[in-house]
Image (cartoon, rainbow, N blue to C red; front, side, top):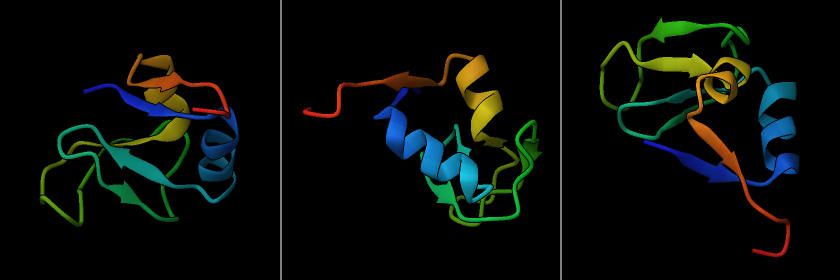
Amino acid sequence: MIFKMTETEFLDHVEENDGICVACGEIQTGGVEPDASGYICEACGRHRVRGFELALMAGDIEFIDEEE
């Protein structure tokens, strides 16, 4: 699953230490380390939450233009 977001949205999530579940797409707010992998998702219960920086490096995040 590839998540599309603006660079500004990405940086906001990084600043808040959010994570993203690569299984269901749910964003977990706060408490997720940048290099986290395998945190449990509060929405689907799977161990698939990654830190935003790791998700970007893994190719799970794609930047879109601010206008889109």
